[in-house]
Image (cartoon, rainbow, N blue to C red; front, side, top):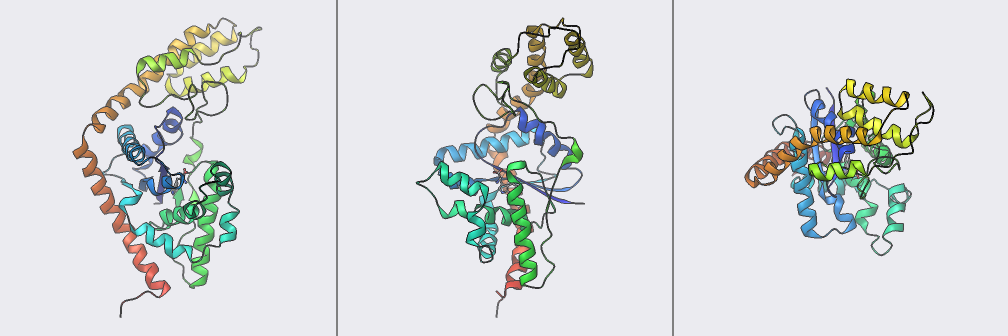
Length: 329
Ligand code: TRP
């Protein structure tokens, strides 16, 4: 069995792309592997968020995770800052992380361009903290998107370096978790690449039925097929990709057929698409509402998650301290 760790920064609500690209697979994965899911609130601090917003965002992501089906009795679900061991492990790892290699990280270079007046140490050591997140549980698999591959590479490098410097075989080299190619990439509704957080492009797990209908009806289309079996332009193929994720195979076959015969009416396609998206989102949205209002439940979940996570990271930290020569007399 693999130990899988997934982290998410607490910045804003989750959308349909997050659901089909990750969450839905996590729900299945939690029964197959030893899973840790955590919210990276320390990492969020590198961009100086408003304290009230930070707190609300952590709560939202947690409620969304639980509503989507992550089970705190099965997996370990926690908030990064509830596990102080990670901060100490990050400090210890930082002794063998070189300034040069951190300065060359793509994410760091991006960030100093975006926030030239706040080039803080947290930004520079972001990959060290991320490595500590992963190594504290000695995770072997980490589901990440393309933008996080370099951070994973650095984590492997830090693990190798630690093992070499101290002549131990302690940290495993984590690999990306790929869900056996089952990952569905949900495109945006504005015809520009994948679904993101930007307005008009994303459908959120918290959107009302009316908001979903409105967004889908406004999705970008073209003037329609001109000859039978003509190639499908990207904006239309995008709608079909979402349809495949949310609708039955019969529905997909029906609209594909209409397209091939040049008889498709985009208004009908969009109405169907909106209703089937609602079919997926509405029950999740209702559970989010219930969970968000149940502070006692949320706090119970996080207490349990922190206990399980601290047990795992405490064991690792004790060993790392010992290996590095920090021992009681
Ligand atoms: N850096 C990740 C992101 O921006 C979030 C993250 C922090 C993470 N620590 C992690 C992801 C550990 C995986 C494992 O998406």
